[in-house]
Image (cartoon, rainbow, N blue to C red; front, side, top):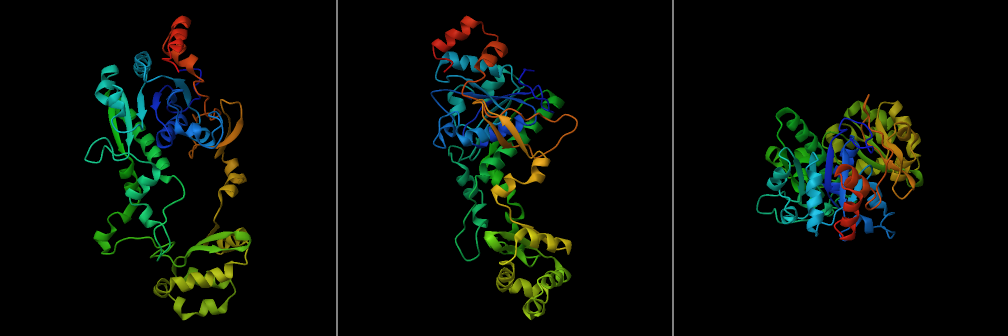
Length: 402
């Protein structure tokens, strides 16, 4: 175990991450937050694209800093035979190889799963591709908006009567990254039980399809194709997000007639409570557009937080729809250590989103942020691979380390 270790259930596990952009690095970040030593393979000649985003230099790019918390960076020139030879030597000391390169890129490097097994028989290879490594579409590549669109998510997101809107976040990348981290942990368990490594062939599109739940085969059961219907819910009414004062919004979900009468009474509007269109669940479902309009007219002058608290005390599920800024300064989340202060390789101390779990007694100490390019060259080549100072200097001079 290296002096970079920070504890945790995966302490002592080494991951070689040949991963760029978002999904692969997110997997690496999740494994690092479980205590694995994650070594990100980088090169000055083939930068992770995220180092270039944000209009700043490569050591201050905000997306890169966010996606690579807790990992190490070592430079291997994969266009150099010596660089590839050193990478193979590192793989021989590792437990997991993670990649989200384009289809056939690993094969062109001589790092297919059979070739990785020849280097280390019990290696685990986690490979993320848009359509997986096999099948008629395995040659295609894409980014998170592609995953969400082809996987069926985008079609379900949007207001009724309008075109599907999708989601303005890279939900596909983080979901795929989390699924790959789960698969990696399962493969480690399998290896511990059997001594065998595994090839994890992960399809980003299939991951998204697996997460849209009962919508995928609902038509076979109900005869109705699921489609974007805003916040409509067939079993809860009202069920929506309503405008409040100062550009706030409140989410309200109401179950059953008794809760509805409680909610209507809380607004002190007799006309709403007595409206025959809303007297029972069937009526509220049939007239949900009118119901949403009536509730919105009452909430628009209310403070979202105060209204939410008032309704919750009455037993109605109602919460302000928090913005990213509101979440970032939420004292309850800071108290839970949902956010951590880390020091990046560039010397800046900044908050990051920590792991969404708490573990006792062996939780990872999340204190290290994203690395400088090649920040851990010395550690990887000198300490892990055991090169002499002259050998290390020679590889740098010949740009095998670059």
